[in-house]
Image (cartoon, rainbow, N blue to C red; front, side):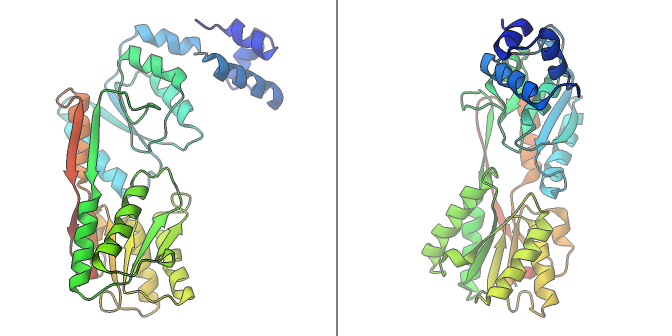
Length: 328
């Protein structure tokens, strides 16, 4: 097993310095800190306080990792997980992470002996934590940097809902659909939706042009703001369009606000469709059409997997279009 002394030798510092770095002491220079972290990574060093937890029991806490805690989509999955978790004496805890701090969060979760980590943000942790996760028997989804983990794999068939959307728009005589997407390549649904959008543009005879895909800086900016700003960019470009599909419902609501402020009627002039079917989508005016990704089923499936009622294999969930006032 790699020791603190090994790290100190490789980094060319004292063991006391290694201890100070690992405890985030402010009395260590950046250069020294970088040397120690480089040695830690190279040697796959695991701090003793983590190793000690290998002999301790797990808690009943299920950690859910997300990138944007303000996104109602995650909150609805969390609500479903909490409801199902109560039946099994599980506590569901939400954590906001980004790509840079995922290892720090995972280390803290290991120290606190959580029983499961459900990673909806899809950032993976370093392999040096995988051995401890495996030995502790922590159930994980999307936390490992490889696909060999034996656990539930949710397959959300978003393509079905997107195809339904194109079919309805075609029936209504629309053929210029703008897709407002995200710049963030880490968003798992990004590639799936973009590919389905392009395929269905071809299939249904819609205008298919790079101009009709607008990339917003989500989640750096809030989804509502991304939708509002993207709609304003569309209007400034004077691009001809008759419908807009958004990365999520919050972005779609931002789009609707911008359009309505410019006197553009929904759905008479432009149809607007969101994704996720958050609760608020039913109550805005006009009510928002959306692709329902069945957050209740997703949340229930995760908890049933944690308690052992779902094991290896794939849980299939079909997305579906819900038509409301914004599509006519």
